[in-house]
View 1 (cartoon, rainbow, N blue to C red):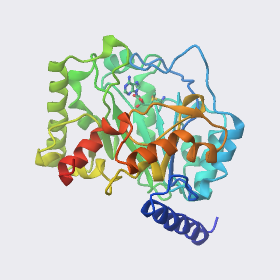
View 2: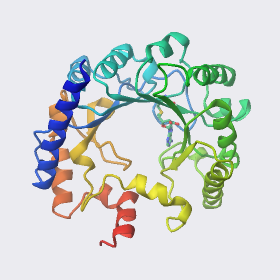
View 3: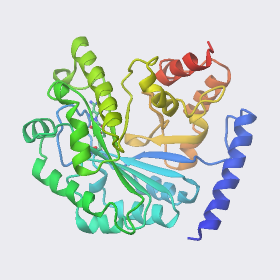
View 4: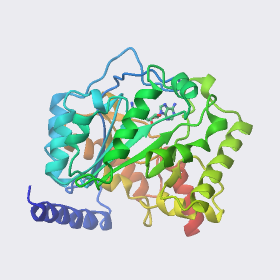
Amino acid sequence: MDILYIQKVREENRLLNEKEIKEKKIVLKSKPQNILLILNNVCNLKCIMCEEFMPHKYIISDTLFYDIVNNMKYFDSFSCQGGEPLIFDKFNIILDKTKKFHTHLNITTNGILLNESLIEKMYDMSITLHVSIDGFDKKTYESIRVGASFDVLKKNLQLLNSIKNKQGYKQLRYELFMVPQKLNYTKVVDAVDFAKQYGFSGIRFLQIRVYANKNCLLNNEESLFVKKQIIACMEKVKIEELNINIDTDIPLDYDDERTNCLKNYLIKDFRDICVAPWKTISIQKFQQVSIDCLCNFKKADVVETLEDAWNSQYIQDVRKGLVANKPFSSCMNCYKNSLFKNISGKN
Ligand SMILES: C[S@@+](CC[C@H](N)C(=O)[O-])C[C@H]1O[C@@H](n2cnc3c(N)ncnc32)[C@H](O)[C@@H]1O
């Protein structure tokens, strides 16, 4: 697809979107610029902290899937997750469409099903793989990521490392995702050496959700230990001048100079109010609408098309709440909101 045509479509959509934000429109004619899509809840692993396995299997309907990928020309980025995205039977369509429309593709994966032929398909694409790895030795990794083989993971990471600087793969990045929890919290700092060894460009430490298996949750002392280790990771990267970006949704000490860049990253959606619901959309399991931001939103409204989701009553209510300065409780409790207030001095 002609890149100039795509740029024109996106620019027009962006201008319309800016106008609608300025006018505080609630029902939008502009399309979302970024989308997060949950493709399924089916996985090849049974990670101990993951609450994805449930009695009801979910795979996105063809109607919704095709409606979304047929709007690809509007999306700057398309993020997909599961379950495991690599076992979704139309994953090749996602690769083809994002490539054709020059859309950046983010995939959160356990990395076990990566192989040469899949990586070949990523040729000449702008793509970020978020590879979830919760241990940096065989015992810890395999105890948490049940069903995965540490040796297979390392083989696949070697493959990525061997192609990443090759012609045609310059826009392929891969980042390490880790959920600090009971079985690995003392080894958080090992993430840096592991990332260095396999050529990761970033590490993200994810806060374990409160409703995860309670045996995995950390007590206050352990959580504090994790925070200190994340800061130690930041320092290590700085001292060793490594090209590894570190971020986290775990609240650290915000006044600390070391986390300044993190602050800027986290509040990128804010103007006078948070504009995430005007730019992004997320469609979760069982086709429920949410917002592609880091807040833990209540999901609502089951949808069959992108338009259903984008102007659903739920998203309209979220927008209305922000405009009227009466945000939903999820927005109020969002740590980005409190960061924004800290920085801007707003109440
Ligand atoms: C549910 S997984 C699905 C994608 C893919 N199968 C994978 O392993 O990355 C998406 C991300 O959520 C993380 N995750 C799983 N359980 C979690 C929990 N209880 N709290 C926070 N993040 C969790 C995973 O580690 C992974 O990075």
